[in-house]
Image 1 (tube, one colour):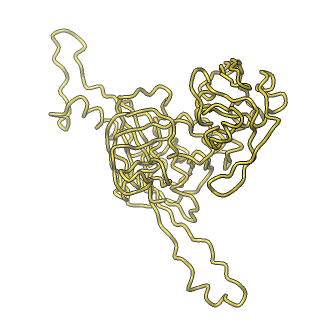
Image 2 (tube, rainbow, N blue to C red):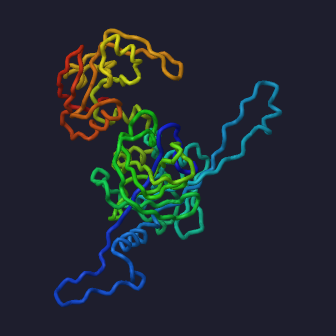
Image 3 (tube, one colour):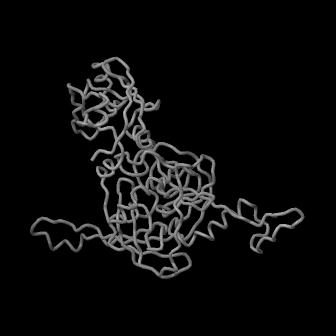
Length: 404
């Protein structure tokens, strides 16, 4: 709710920015350049670019306020009298969002509005609050689509850019409402495009890559846009990393993460149709091999040694019939063992199936790494797998497909 995504154990994240500005270059020899507006006197080109983007698109960034009612306390029979004294008061939270069209649709993070019983929107330089409702959501991606009931003149749509064309080092502008301070702009660069360290989305690994930026992101920035120098949205600011290594701590450490906008654009039609997408539905909508896998990193070392397994890779557990993996000849295990997870649960794992070592030359230690390769493929394009099979290494070509 109160921004800055919270996750235990690894990293945290969010942000980006930019815009372009034409400022009156001479279009002929001997002609003096057009004078800059009075407010632009003394600004550097870099500053003018940022100022123009803020002035052009800033009103499309909104302040999201939510009220969440805690679940009712369940008491055993005979103790109902105490229920009123045990009820928690409604919780309030704030975050950010941005307008994407004149119909009133607004994108934000799911964790900003999760469980909300009331959602209101405020626009820049407007003291009024407008009611909004949750239209659709993709919790595994931490994305939510709202629709606000507001006058058309208040709706300033931002342009959704192409996050696949981002280059490390380019300008990044983050807009939002950190700590409830309405309409704040920070600026930096794209620091990296990296494998998701677990900061965005759930454990399904359906957000394989994130945008890292040094533009200041803080609690309350969640759901706000990350822009490039053309004023296009390239990401949704979602999480921050703190010196303590914890998610959601209220301090900025120069490391923020944003959800790539291209990933969001894929599911806008479903979100506008009112769907709440589960991890299973998202997986079925994407090209895949048709196998279930378990990383060898969770196998105890003694088990890997006992069966002569590689130190890392993805062990095939099942192969779907008539799938690309089945046609390519990938093999499921015929022998199994049980391992104990940190939760205390016992998990059955194969010990003699194929192990995926590399995909297009990328070493595989997690399912997220494989998904990152697969999602970058064009329709009909094969992925080259390096496979360990009973002590031998072989190469297989597999064309991922959407399997319903």
